[in-house]
Amino acid sequence: MSHTHEEWSESNLNHYQSAHSSRTKSERIRNEADTLMANCASKTQRSQQEANNRLGSRIEDCNSWRADLQTELDNNIRENGLLKETKAELEHAIAETERPLRINNECIKNREARISIDLVKDEVENSLEREVENIKTYQQRMQKMLGKVNQQIETNHSMQDKLHADLEHKDMALEIDRDCHEMHNDAIDIKHHDGVEEEDVSGSVPQSWAKFSKNNVEESQAAGRSATRQLRYDVNNLINNAASDMSVHWNKTNRSFTDRISETQDAHRNLKSNLILTKNEIAEMERHIERIKSNIASKDPPLRVAQTRLKKRTRRPDVENCNDFAHNKLLEEVNELHQCIKHLEDKLQEANNVAQELLKNKERLESNIRVKANTLLIDKQKCMSMRRSFPYNVIVTKYF
Image (cartoon, rainbow, N blue to C red; front, side, top):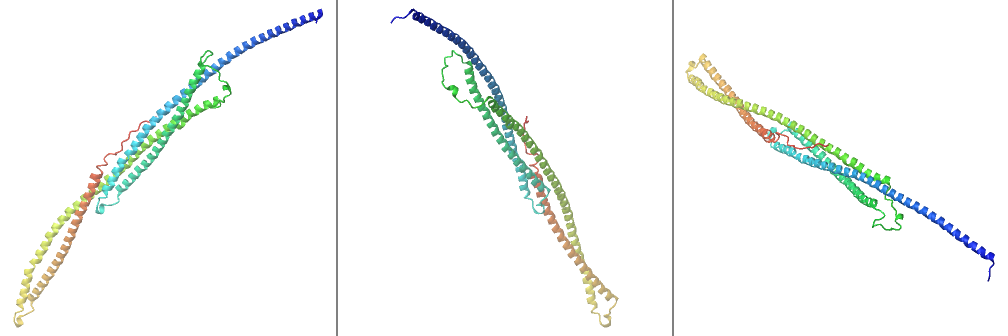
C-alpha cells in the first residue's frame, strides 16, 4: 500500500514530537530524581546526625542518673553500715543490763537470809524492787528499739536492691546506647531488621523514666538514710538515757543500803551497850541476892535466941511466970524477926524474879545482836561489796 507525501510528513512529525516529549519527560524526571536524591541525602544525614545527638544526650542523661544512683547507693550502704554498728552497740547495751539485774537478784536472794525481826520489808527492799523494774523497763524499750533497727536494716537492703537493679539497667542501657552511638554506615555488623520499627517500645517515656530513678533516690534518702540517721540518734539517746537512769536508781538503792546499814549498826551498838549494862546488872543482882540470903540466914540465930528465951521463961513457976516487960519484948522481938525474915524472903523472891527477867533480856539481846550481825554481814559485806560501782559499760559512737 502506498502512502501520500502528506502522510509521510505527518508520520515524521509525530515521531519528532514523541521523541521530544519523551526527552523532555526524561529530563524532568532526571532533574526531579537529582533533587529528590539530594534532598533524601541531606535529610538522611541530618536525621542520622540528630539521632546521634539524641543518643549522645540520652547517654549523658543516663550517666547523670547513674552517677546520682551510685552516689545514693554508696551513701545508703555507708549509712546502713553505721546502723549495723549501732545495732551491735544496742545489743551490747542490752546484754550489759543483765549484770546489774543479776547483782540486784543476788542482793534480794541474800537478804532473804535475814532472820527474825530483821526480815522486814524496808526501804532497801523497796529500792531494789524499783531498780529491777527500771532495768526491765529499759530492757523492753531497747528490745523494741532493736526490732526497729532490724526492720530499718531490711528496708535499707531493699532500697539498695532497687538502686542496684536501677544501676544494672542503666549500665545495660548505656552499653546499648554507646554501641548505637558509635555505629556508622560502614559498620560491618549492620543489617536489615524488617518490621523492627513496628515493635512496641512502651516501657516508659522520658518523664516516667527520669521519675523512676528520681523516686528511687528520694525513697532511699527519706525512707533509708534519713530514717536511719534518726534511728541511730534515737538509739544513741536511749542507750545514754538507760545508762543514766539505771545509774540513778543504782545510786538511790546504794544510799538506801548505806542508811539501812548505818541504822542497823546503831541498833547493833545500842544492843551491845545494853547487853553490857544488863550483864553488869545481873552480876550486881546475883551479889545482892547472896546478900539477902546471907541477911536472912543472919536472922536465924537471934530468932532462935528469942524463941529459946521465951521457951525457957514458960517454965517459970506459978506467979513467976509473969507477962512482964521482958516477955513482951521477947514476943515483939520474935514478931519483928519473923516480919523481917518475911520481908527479906519476899524481896529475895522479887530479886530472883528480876534476875530471871535480866537473864531473859540478856538472851534476847544476845539473840538480837546475832540477828543484827547477820543483817550487817548480808547488807554490808555480801550486797554492798557487789554494788561499789555500777556494772554497766557501754560505748556509744556519735550518730552523725
